[in-house]
Amino acid sequence: MGVLNVTPDSFSDGGRFAGLDAALAQARRMIEAGADLIDIGGESTRPGATPVEEDIELDRVLPVIAAIRQISDIPLSIDTLKPAVARAAVQAGVVMWNDISGLTASPDSLPTAAELGCPIVIMHMKGRPATMQDSPRYDDPVREVLSDLEARANAAMSAGVARDKIWLDPGIGFGKQLEHNLALMAALDRLKALEFPVLLGVSRKRTVMAIDPTATDPNDRLGGSLAMALFGAAKGVNAIRVHDVRETVQALKVWAALAGDGGASPSAPQIEARQIPYAARAIV
Ligand code: HH2
Image 1 (cartoon, rainbow, N blue to C red):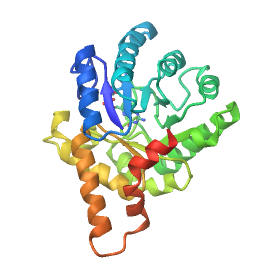
Image 2: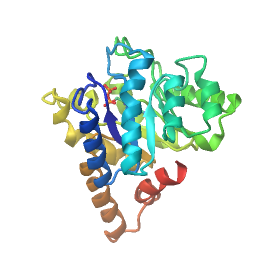
Image 3: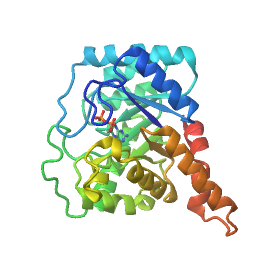
Image 4: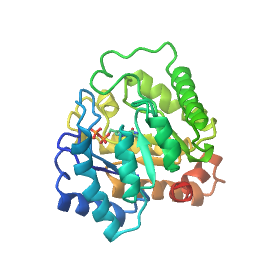
C-alpha cells in the first residue's frame, strides 16, 4: 500500500504532494514501482497534529481520487476519521476505508462502514493524535491492543460490517512508546491468529529514530523501515503501508526469492510473504 498524503503537514512528506500535479505524479511513480493499493490522506495524524475541517479534507482528496481514476484502475483507499469523507471518497471510486480510530471517531462511523460495504481497516490508537504520545501507558500492550482490536471488529460486525471486509492494524506509533511498538511487532503472529487480514504501517516512523537516534529526519529512516517491513512480512502480514514503494517492493521480492529459491523448503510465513500482492488484490 503506497501512501499519498495530500496534506501540507504530514510528518515525512507534508506539502510535497499537496498540489494536484505533484500528487498525480507521485501516484504514477507508486503504480510503476509496483504498488497494489494507494492510500490517500487529507489530514495528518502525526503526533501533535490538529484536526482539519471536513470541507477542507474533501477539497484535498476528491480531486486527487478523480485524477487517479482517470489514469489507472489501481485500488484506492481513503485514510480518514470522518464518515462523510469516507462516503464521498467511495462515491468517487475508492474501494477501502482506512480508519485510524478503528471506527470510534464519530457515532456515524460504524453505521457508515456497514452502509458502504467496502473493506475497512480498523487500526488501534490509544488517545487522539494531538496528545497520544504524552506518556502512553499499558500494563500489557500486546494483550490490550489485541483485545481492543477484537472488540472493535466485533462492534463493526454487530453494526452490520461483514467479517470478510475487516482488516486489523496494530497502529505502530499511535499512542505507543518504543517498548510497546517492539512488543507489538514481535506479536504480529498473535494478531494474525485472530484471522483477519493484517495491515502494518511502519514507514519512516519514530520507532526507527528511537533505535537509531541519528535518524531525526524521517527521510533518513528507509533502512529501518525496510527492516520492519521484512520483519512484518515474515510474521505473515497481508499488506504494508509505505512511502517508499519501489524500495519496499524490491526488498520483498528479493527476500521472497531467497526464501523460495534458497534450497531450504520455505516456512509458512515465507510462503505468505510471496502472496502479499495477491492477498491485497483478492480482498479489495
Ligand atoms: N500511519 C499513518 C497514517 N495512517 N493508517 C494505518 N492503517 N496504519 C498506519 O500505521 C498509519 C495510517 C501515519 O503516517 P503518514 O500518513 O505518513 O503521516 P501523517 O499522519 O502525518 O499524514
